Length: 290
Image (tube, rainbow, N blue to C red; front, side):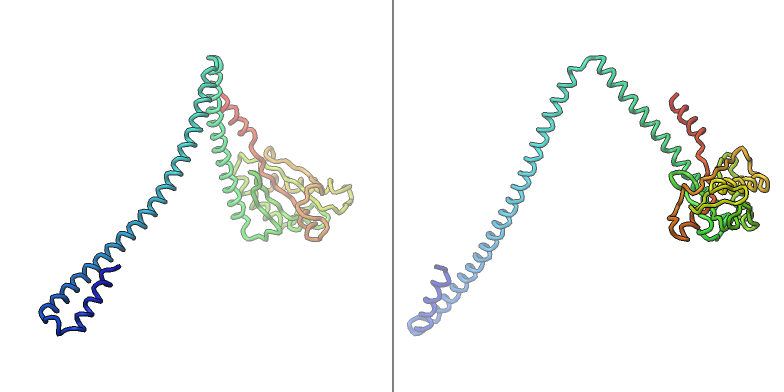
């Protein structure tokens, strides 16, 4: 039973019978009650504090138990790996000296190959940077010409310049128009500034059969168109013919579906391909092997 429950009846009896108790004694009992009540409240506060601390301790114990369990798992994992590592070391300890030397040489070769690969990657990155610079120069020289008529791009490290036949030639002809000569002149100026560049001019057609005069089929038409472009680049703009190749692809390298008029128009094109400098690449390989 709480202290307060004991005191209340006693105090009530004193209040009911004031005549039986002197005024001085009554006040003393009041003071005593107030002191006991203050003590009771203090004890209640202490009890709550103890209960809160006990709850915190229980929570901390749960966290500690979880942490201990996690650490035990890590210890078990490390023990297992340590056992495997020791077994591997035991297995390695039985190899012969010749095997050890072979392993050493293999590791050295791996290091050399890794360095070689890094050098090749750096060279390829440099080539990609040069290709992007070439593309930007070409686009800057061409200006705001419609992308449907001329498209410049890099694909798998190779620079391509696609020019539509609508811009270069009249329908069914391989004679270059005057407007086309101006465009070829701008392309030639950029290519001429890179004397080491070699390139191929490819003629492409759609799949509609063609025969006119000396031209038997699309093979003839595609070749004649490519050689017409090559002659302009050589004779009118002074590009080195030793750096140029001409080729006809006929209808067999389409970039669009020939079932639509738009697809046929996209396929009728002349493509200038900046050829990769394989001799320099192989020279690089030979240098790294030495």
